[in-house]
Image 1 (spheres, rainbow, N blue to C red):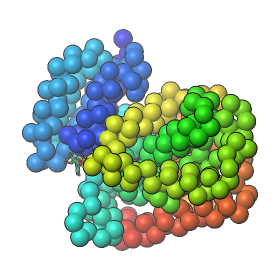
Image 2: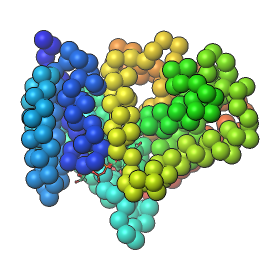
Image 3: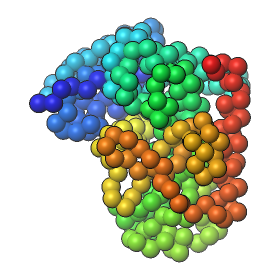
Image 4: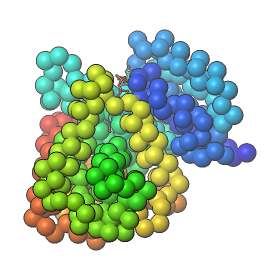
Length: 327
Ligand code: NAI
């Protein structure tokens, strides 16, 4: 049996976590031969609810679940962890402006960044799910100066999966037929779901669909899918978000398929002209537990340039709004 890996999850009594923890404990994230210790963080008022979740985890008698920590102290939750799924975040309350939301979350993610810096494994892989995910990841990263910025990522895999599913439906194919999907930029309605490099059964996706459908229906539907789910379900996506978080970590740990890539919000080193230091979603491949941005994707069209710049602009504005809180 392998040594257990330590996986921290924040917001562990929330909706996404309820759809995620049991799958992590069953081996769906890191492999069916990899024991895990779950280190669960909640705010103090939610510790009772967390206790209930932990009782249910125990009652599953998962063979791979080697231990559970439950706490309201980030320094305990992040001690020696190999993976962190930062799900807990401050939701937008009544009358709260976007700036207030950014600031409330900046406080949470700067404290968590500092705790990661102090107590996590030096190789910790961090995925931020809690919104605004890209900027929260940037804040955590900036507060963890002793960790490699490459350890901090934000989730756009749900957008990636949504884009795959919508295209499969339109082209009467399955998601298995679709390769090289890309989401550029922010996990928000400015994201750019880009079909330029994408193929369906080996054929260019843009040869199979109408340009007007792509620009006026497909892109807005992928961008607005989260809002459509809230409208239909009366609650935000939870199971699909949990699924995407597991897929993001699994891909990072175990690698991408040959001739394919995934979308990940990662630290920009200036690739594709995107400002250095932003956490921006790029097409990425993973191997040996490391990610790299795919080189040479065609972004030369005016349409792509404009869409990529718009979502970059939004990320720059989010960063500037919390600049006074960044070290
Ligand atoms: P939820 O409200 O059901 O659960 C959030 C949990 O986080 C609550 O139990 C709360 O007590 C906890 N929490 C709040 N502050 C915390 C802190 N400082 N430390 C630890 N725990 C804390 O929300 P849900 O549905 O689970 O969503 C969580 C987040 O994920 C939200 O910010 C949501 O917007 C985001 N999200 C992101 C997606 C993405 O694709 N990146 C997709 C869907 C949701």
